[in-house]
Image (cartoon, rainbow, N blue to C red; front, side, top):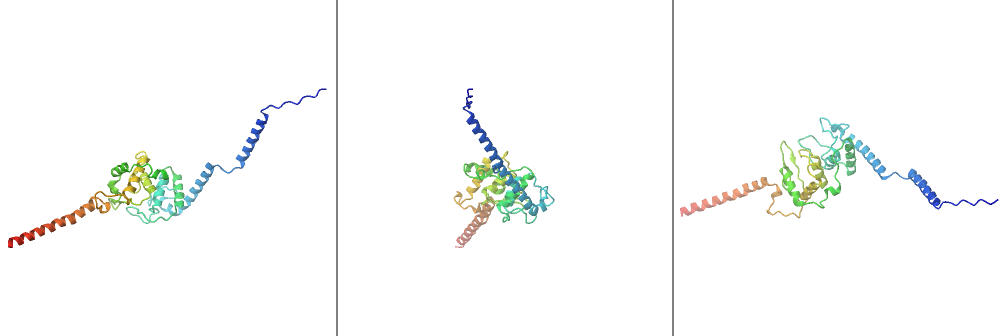
Length: 269
């Protein structure tokens, strides 16, 4: 009998076997590979929220409630977002030292890592303004002149035209902006702390906030010249009026006395 000739293998059979082997290897890798970046980020966020809850229970719950619902001693925090926490705690205003017309800025007692954890926990209670990124507060691409126009229109009534601050009603005040972290300026515009109105992106877009921050930083820098000469602290008409009243009027009185004295001498002679 004639031997049956061996069946010829299909030319693509080797390719199919290789693909199956790679698929099996990929499955094994997927089964034993480390967690993906998304999973790692989610785990990290969960840990931050857990740690933030612990910090909140110790330093914040007595005034703001165990779940951020607020009490008679402090407003609710549901929906304020991470930006409000980063501003209030990052400037030392919170935890508050004592009740009053306005909570003042003071030394910060938390590290930035702890502030981020507190912010993560409060943000988990309800959606709100998010802490800005470095690119959002960077002066790169900002229009300083336009920022000056926006600042004088929206901010100068309280903060003075150069951001020196000023008094408000009922013991409140607008703080000076010299040396303030750009991130905190952005967050203040987002959240509207104390008596300040909020300027969300729907009212004041991100680019306009960046322009204002660039203007404030420039006008208060050592490189900024005052074309009017002596700035008197940049406090505006109050200090300028006082200067004019004391020195200007005083000089006129001195001149009038000198003229009267010399006139009397001339008549006697």
